[in-house]
Image (cartoon, rainbow over all chains, first blue to last red; front, side, top):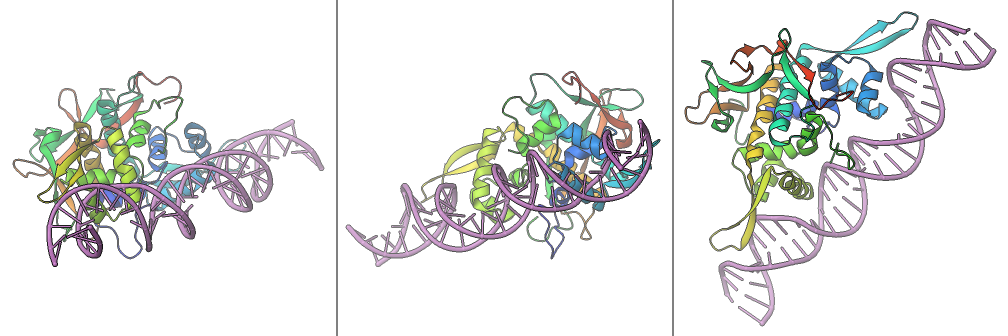
Length: 155
Length: 155
DNA sequence: AGGTCTGAGTTGGTTTTTCCAACTTATGTT
DNA sequence: AACATAAGTTGGAAAAACCAACTCAGACCT
């Protein structure tokens, strides 16, 4: 657990979120889960992650409420476990999409994009935009962070 | 450098982006830079990061084109270095905003939000939304990833 | 000229994570 | 009974992070 303090929950959302998904491999597991993968062996084979780390990450993602551990049984097999995204886990496609979009824009690969975000029904590509409450688009350069209610002295 | 391979640049944007900002502390340095911090001592004091790690991260962020190292001289001091976001670095406020928004929604603090994203001129709060090419909003659950041009077998 | 201060690091040694390969466990099949 | 398989565990090596102490180069003071 990279940034967690035992005495006090960190105030900053960035820190709190990175507590949950900032460890190595965590977001990649979530990304693969968003692609529909649910099993230990799928994550292991697709990501090439060491199995002890995978085991630890799955446990901490379950504990963080991002994955849910379920029992399944395949024809002629014993019971096994699978891992399914919760609503909070599915919410992380916001973060994944941001990483994809930044990578496409500022760190493109010579081979083009490996994945695109699309609307499920229509397969139309979608992008992330900053939007005000009255649905006005705001360019990225015109957006900044300000201290909110929970900021006491520093952020 | 967490995920980098020397023989081949990874195809997936998520992996490529995490190569650059996935190490511990990197995104927090960027976040503080977005708040206007530029100096070694500011990052050190605000983040509480070990100085050798800070030194290494600043160097790798410079190398990745996210920060730019500049010389400055204060009244009655010798020349020193400061670190300024490049355009690519400023683009990371997309990622920071996604982390903040996810944290607010799925992992809220009892003290409320420590920071809000706002439009610079008006201070109106902004949120990240998925949008199609013809400016239609798409709810998060209706968005998924699909393989793009650079995906050969797996993603 | 010598001593002190300050920002920005570097260095050496310890602790924590990650990695890797080999092993285990609980079934179900042959 | 022997073998196969998914889902892990375990032990030891390598890498990364952490911490405290130290350096370095100019500015400033006496």
